[in-house]
Amino acid sequence: MRRLGKALAWGIEGLTHLTGWIAALSLVAAAVIVTEGVVVRKIFGVSTIWQIEASVFLLIFTVFSGSAFVQKNEHHLNVDLVVIHLSPKVREITLIVVSILSCMIAAILAWYAWPMWWETVVRNDHSESLWGPPLWIPYFFFPLGMTLLCFQYILYIRNKIVALRRGDYNEEMELFELRDIEIPKADSDTQ
Image (cartoon, rainbow, N blue to C red; front, side, top):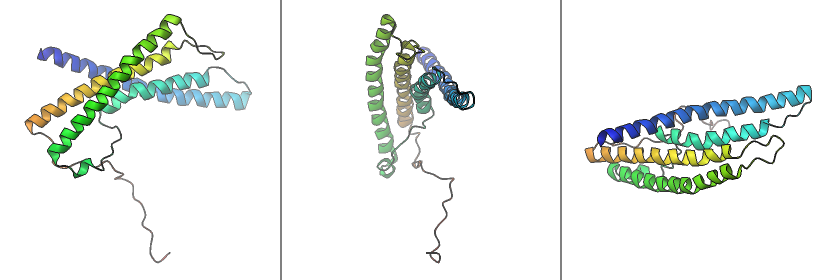
């Protein structure tokens, strides 16, 4: 059973890593496509029909499929106003509870998004633009991303619980703030 759990965790981590890097490349591709569209329109005076929609599809993929990668690396935005004032053990329990709620939300979204995607496949829906790509492609990104995010939260929760049971957690809260930016202080003489 433990081997199956490790294999599933390895598979989820691998798929998350793969989709995260594809999401990063999709972001670059969207930027290149938009830039190409602007250059072609301004220099050659030719307007094309596919650039905006293709870049929107790539950005949709980046946002939803990249969310699991961000969670895997614990880089989601955190509001630590309350959490920093809690004791280390209570803080870890709070993070577990919040992660369980986030996992449930991702699971519910995925649960309702998969039938929506399948409906576009069955009906063979296409975009109403002149380019007219099939809509099952961008509709696939949301349930995929939410499913991966749910699985990633499950791994995160499991790891947090194991660490909490072992007593292996940070005694001091790592603050998420701008550390490397020097902000010049206003001189009282110049005012």
